[in-house]
Image 1 (cartoon, rainbow, N blue to C red):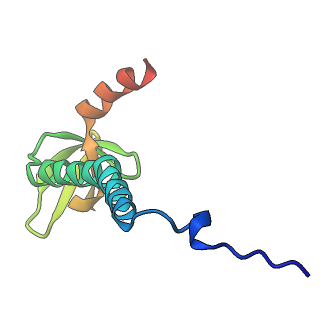
Image 2: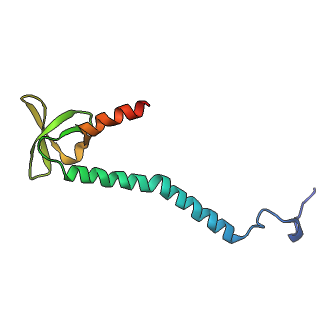
Image 3: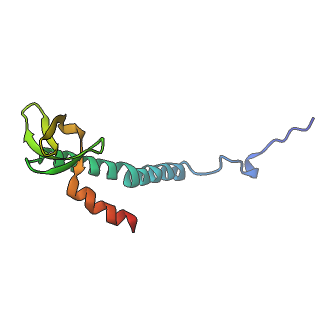
Length: 112
């Protein structure tokens, strides 16, 4: 039976400096923050601002993909949305996905 022993002069896998490992780990966290966390929080902030600034007459798209126009804003965090003349329903503010005009502007940009 042969047993290999690695001495200190042979430089095993643990020969690196702990400072390099810490810098590498910190760099990975920074990259993850820049490319994943920051854009998500920015988009969430824009979405909250859009929902808070809704007015009657705004054209919207719900999370379910239903297009309509805000007919009335109720005090209990709900909206009356008109989907066709004479047809309306009540939804929660949180069910709003985006403004209809901005949804239409994104479609041509995505196809390029």
